[in-house]
Length: 111
Length: 114
Image 1: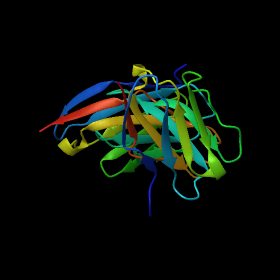
Image 2 (image 1 turned 90 degrees about the vertical axis):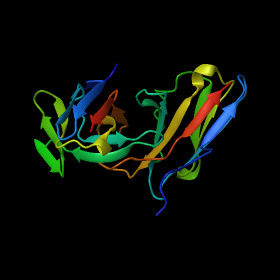
Image 3 (image 1 turned 180 degrees about the horizontal axis):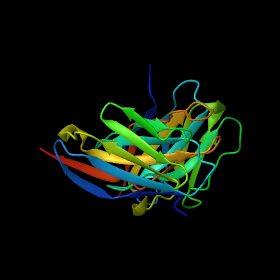
Image 4 (image 1 turned 120 degrees about the horizontal axis):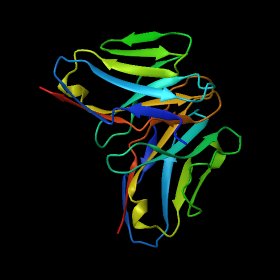
């Protein structure tokens, strides 16, 4: 059972464009929603995270939007740059339990 | 400070052999995860240790896979009688206990079964 569904699987965007990645979850006990960025040959690294008591969190060009009633959250990358080309994973966690990851989105930013 | 350290970084083994992969978590981190990532694929959960609680082994794909965590620190993932489909990058992560704490990943061990 896939508890966190992520889409799209891949995304191509022009430099300066907006990349949008969506995730949906089922478990209402989840209370922490991080996004991880992974470059080839490296382990994933935390990019930005949100708690369900807020609807949006922004850090630089990266924004998480969270819709608790729809059980959905998304990552927006504004002014996308070639250096943003990576695989992005959403995740969700309930207190005391493991991190559950989405399937990942490969983002390619064309110069 | 030191991050999550995994060894070896690369391992080539013959089909049927046993392998041990090691993870040194960040000091003080009580939670430790193992994930498997096949080429270009997502993160497949294997096992989760949290403090002194019984580990969540629900992701281990077969009884050939086992893991232990000694003294609440170092963890070893053992794969017995390796098969070619075990070839993947094995990632370890650790975090503090509590709500909403960041999990830090190691660089992974690339396992190739020939």
